[in-house]
Image (cartoon, rainbow, N blue to C red; front, side, top):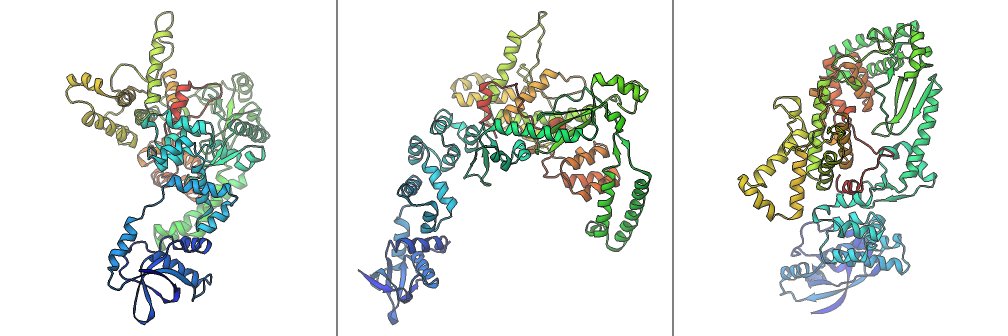
Length: 640
């Protein structure tokens, strides 16, 4: 065996090379590295007839050299060092030995080597080019290299996974990194839990506040933005939540003033929606002129004629693709959107609350009447406010609640939300601990002079499983209910002893983490966030919202606005839901024009995957001045 310089043009691939899968993976990067650093390891070859040599080991290096020749970076007659083996040597064995016995570099060694090159004055772009890597790959390596030395030691000894290290790298604060790792239990070290804890004081670029203000406006105001380089979408992290909140409030005031200019007496702009359901409401009246009403009638007639023609010629599938029909629908929708409005004279005695929805879009609650404005409006209307016969501010009808949903539907929706809360709470012992301590303190220290509880808690401490479903009702068909039932079954049949007499010794043997998980399941089973017609304690439901907030519950991951749900709404509510979910205008127009059964089918398709949920179970957000205890805010970092 000897090392000889051999021209690349004389080398050929060998069929005996054992590497078969992904033989060309990373070849371009390897070629760039060879161009920058030279060939670091020789090839192993055997001499063939005709003065050629077959490459029996180093096939990827040979392919990279070939690419460099094709690109003109190397000359065809350029030579490379090759170890020449005897023709009698076993080529398969040699190839296998080279591929089997080599060891990949540990990731800590690799990323710290990149950092060393930076310290020596090399730029990220230069490193990327010389090693055939994307600049973001180099930046991610440098981010890992910048972890706390204690954490790098954990990664080096495989006490930490690479995914966990990536989550810790979201923060540049070594103390915060170490706290998130060393002060957490093993079951609190999932990457998403670590990332949530380190970013709990920030706003993501996809939050409703960031969407409303805009990252550019936030940065223009002096706000700093960090990037989670390991997130799939290179997620932006807005570091100054207080500034973002002030910008949102200021923008809301501006938007509110623009709305007030339409003739309202007052406008209140705030991020969180206040209790508007105790206020009176104006009723919209038809505002179209005779000319516009006639035009709308002609458009509807034209739409029906065109629809009949298209159905006759091409069937239902052709309707959706018919451009003239779509244009007619758009014109109808444009007029319909202005069809109903408020009486300008009544607007002078009413106002609006301007806030944000869960997508960061402006939400206007218009036509609200304050108590002190009722006498003037009464005089204007010539009838008593709140009289069921009044068309201006109708009284609530029996069996209906906020938003026009029936009491039965509210009960089912909040039962579904309670099931989702139980699923999340059972997986979060820290919040469960807070949730069980709350009612204990309420009963111990906060009773009235007559011994009655002054504040109800969502977790009802009775050591029982509060039923949510009657077995055949709508709640039992929901994802949240199924997930909760499965979770209970797994504990009942796979964790706790079958014999109740064995439970105590079993509990004594368990570690703290298992006991906390068992506590979480028990607390979850006692959670009651259902708002029913005869049991809707305001303080209990408020505590339910607090628990939902601590868990970061997003009902969009559980709730499905399917036909089963939509059939329980009236057509106006269906169209409103589609509008809130930014459904296609032509779909909204079709649902508006069609019968309820058609509207249900159209809406089900439009709302699927939109993230829309009914208002009674929408996500609870922070409320200024109503800070949660530190234990809860810590626990919030442990949930999705």
